[in-house]
Amino acid sequence: MQLENTLVGKKVAILVANGFEESHMTDLHKSLVETGAEVKIVSPEKGVVNSWHNGNWGHFFPANAHLPTTMSHHFDAVIVPGGSRHVARLRSNPQTARFMRGFMEDNKPVGLFEEAVKILAFDEVLSRRNVASFEANNEVLTENNADLVEEAIVVDDMLCTATGEILSMIGSFAACVQSYQPEAWEAA
Image 1: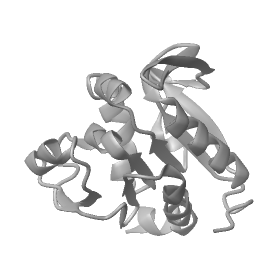
Image 2: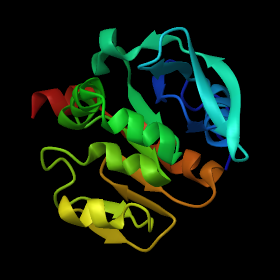
Image 3: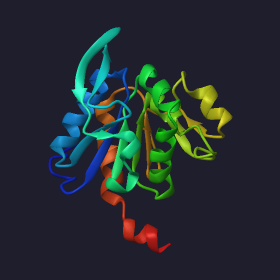
């Protein structure tokens, strides 16, 4: 799928905490930059955030925005890579729920890879939403009334969840971002 310059003028947040899966984030970042999107790394960590790579701590990456002072209305969309370590850190941080709730309430595009879907397991946000089944998530998702779908990529309105190959998710996520119409949503 040709994605070059499909998201010019769009602002996309990549939400990560220490322990994110390095290859997921770097693949997402590179692909989103190729779409022409303005990409910012948002993190609860100040300055730099540390990845997890091949079973060990990986590289440090600059965080462009500090989660406690960043709002969902600063972005057109958010995407969260996988990695159980960073997902656990994000889930334990109340600022994550505040940030993600803004995207969900405004029906903005949200992309979640593998374990990352668990960060929406609060306040019935996932109730009756179709999400990609990922064994490590299934119990938490079922407890939150999500509908598990046995597919690699599942799009439910503006919520895009995926397992397996992260680059295949980018096309579906980009389509959500392209189809998002804030004026129509705000008028409803």
